[in-house]
Image (cartoon, rainbow, N blue to C red):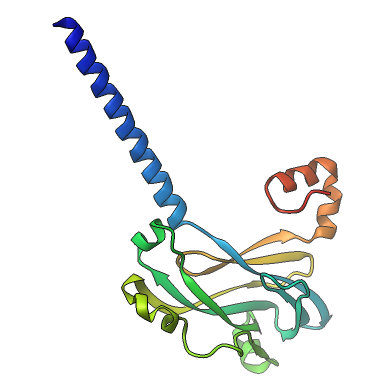
Length: 199
């Protein structure tokens, strides 16, 4: 009788441990999928005048960056964005986006209204909206909207634009020239994190 109780207890412990492991795996998977990010553009700047810059935009799959002249002390990129339902993200599908516009902007509203301004179309070769791409699968769509991110311009910074499951965001890091002062340990650290290729 005691042996049977021990066996049942061990079986229950194994089942509970398995259930706990599956629950933890499910939580980790859910968190990972809902917070998934993907780089969609890289931008650097070269100053050519007072509040005038050359913006170098590199998109995935493009070796040569595109060059744009922008005005202001900040920059902004806009996109059409389709947010999918959370369960669609969890099973492996990602939000859909299309970069639409790159432009300069001014932190000061008076300069924004009075200063020179230029905007560039990043999606001229596309037609229709991103949502139309998913018409056969519209049950996956949670919301369609425009997503925009902007930040100050620095010529010593590389900006990476990311697609999250909810919209665009931008992160900054020093340019490669500044990273060169980090030495061998710094290069190894960045390589291990996937920030740069092995020398």
